[in-house]
Amino acid sequence: MKKRLVLIDGHAIIYRAYYAYPASLITPEGKQINAVYGFVSILLAVIKELFPSHIAVAFDLDKPTFRHIDYVGYKAQRPKADKELIDQITDVKETVKVLNMPIFEVEGFEADDVIGTLARQAGEGGGKNVEVVIATGDQDAMQLVNKGVKVYVPKRGKNPAKMYGIEEVKEKYELEPEQIVDLKALMGDSADNIPGVRGIGPKTAIDLLKKFKTVERVYSGLDKARNKGEIRELVAKKLTDDYEEAMRSKKLARIVTDVPITLDLKACKLNDYNKKKAVKLFEKLGFQTLIKRLPSEEWEKEAENIFINEKI
Image (cartoon, rainbow, N blue to C red; front, side):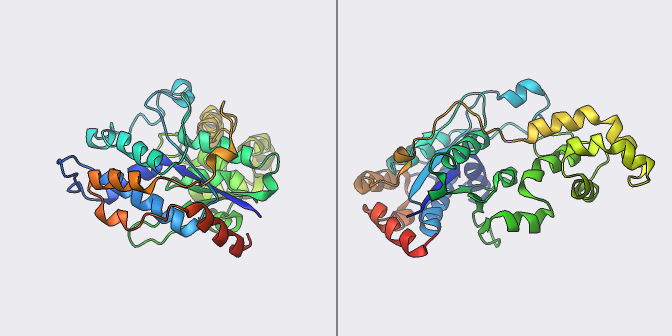
């Protein structure tokens, strides 16, 4: 039987939940709890829709990563997270623990890197029997998609949930998944303050990558293509002027897959949890409607039966 490991991008889901649910959601004691409520709601929906045999949650840590050290401008334009959001992270992690799910976080790296590393390790040593699904709202994860890894973007407003495999990524970006990092190297990413090449937009970047495949090959073939008139002089000048920025941007955009962490697949197995404890915590938080959505205590058997029937 094939296994399905679902890796939850904790911080991406927390932020999505915080801005999607009203601040008026509070605990019986009056504490704002919208991010926790939204996170748990999305988490339970992911379990119901994907039926993982294994699951884990990755979080960022509130410390600089190697990207911040390499480039002081990385994410520098982002406003500081609301205190009301930060104050809810502890409660989010408590709900994950009460549902008996392991948490992974490594200092110096983002949750994306942790997930990328776990996904790679899941594909090694018996990985033919493991399908990895990354649950996130962060488009950066698309670069990790391959034959054994998919990205699941949860429902948001009127936008339905969607699963991205290789073909879906190609349809959306007109490029192979592994080229997404090259796309960001050329066009940049304002959300993360990744500069890219000034004046190179999505269309030009995609056209270049369709022809040259990678940023490195764009530059190695630039002079020849310029002389043959295959690249407009203005585009060639922009590329030449911002060579260092393009290389730096690719390094910043690439999700690393060698974080010092080891995947223990057995520890990620969707084991039985103490439903009474979960109900008690949910009552404390005021999550009466979510209590009804909690799976049975024997969700491991429930998931296995459905997973077998899916014949994945």
